[in-house]
Structure formats: C-alpha cells, structure tokens
Length: 55
Image (cartoon, rainbow, N blue to C red; front, side, top):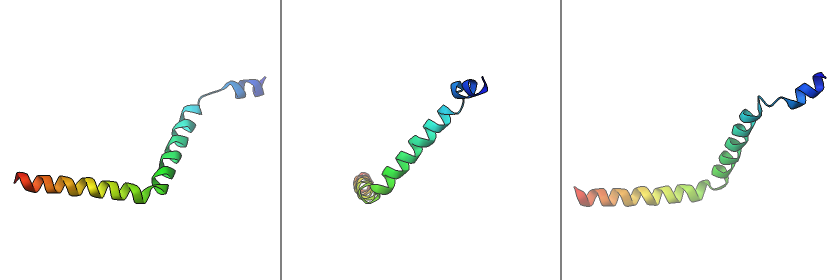
C-alpha cells in the first residue's frame, strides 16, 4: 500500500521539470556561446551607431 501511494505522489514532478528545462537551456547556451556572443555584439554595435546618429 505504501509503495502504491509513493508511486502515485506527484509533488516533486513540477520541480524536476523546471530543473530539466534549465539544464537544457544552459546546455544550449554553452553549445551556442560563440554564435550568441556574435549576435549580441552585432546588435549592440548597431544600437550604439544608431544612438550616435541621434545625438
């Protein structure tokens, strides 16, 4: 009876899902670090150019 109740419990499932999603996201950031860095550098360079034109 205790084993059946233990298997039916789902209290920690939400926490495990969130942790797994975070692990996947961190893994993707690590794998695509160079591409993300180039993308953000380009975006902020363009923002800086546009801001200089305004002032």
